[in-house]
Amino acid sequence: MDDRPLFERDPAAWHAHLAEGNARQARKRVGADVLIRNDRGEVLLVNPRYKPDWDLPGGMAEANEAPHGAAQRELREELGLQLRLQTVLVVDWVAPHGPWDDSLMFVFDGGTLTNAQISSLRLTDDELTGYQFCSPKAAKSLLRPYVAARVTASIAAAAEGFPCYLVNGIRSFGAVHPSAAHPTAQ
Image 1 (cartoon, rainbow, N blue to C red):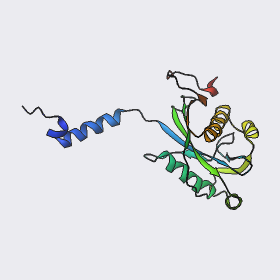
Image 2: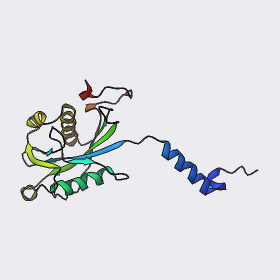
Image 3: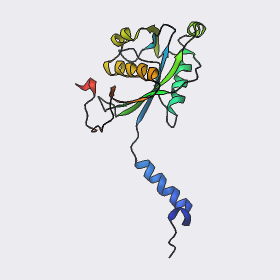
Image 4: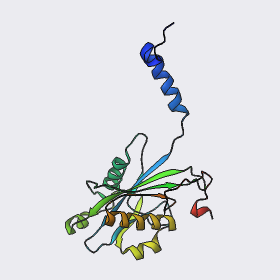
């Protein structure tokens, strides 16, 4: 009897075992947005055609795409903007709601755009009907409440210099039960 572990005895069988386990694990949707500001501290928002509220620029990651890569791709595709992202500001776990399973939403720091960068912004994708810079206070009236909370937390994280973890837009360091209600479900 060969007592060696499976990965030593039969690497192909070990790989098949890992693939089977991977196929059974849960998948999460991943979104990646970018906090972009102008020199007045206003926040760039976009108006998606497919939903009723404004949002930060960004979108959903494709299969096996890194969150920062998804954010950079979305900026290029939707606004013609090439940016080097600075750091992650927020990771927000969003509970299942409506037809959607839970998701992880990342917000990256896109920094402050120069006037030349702002002048070069253009809608390059028919997913958006517009974009605008607005004060953080004005942004709250254009965003869904939990997205507004995510933006507020992102601005704070940029100022504090370290990222934060949110649950449905609320700073949280405790455990959250999977049945936690989503803010829009209430």
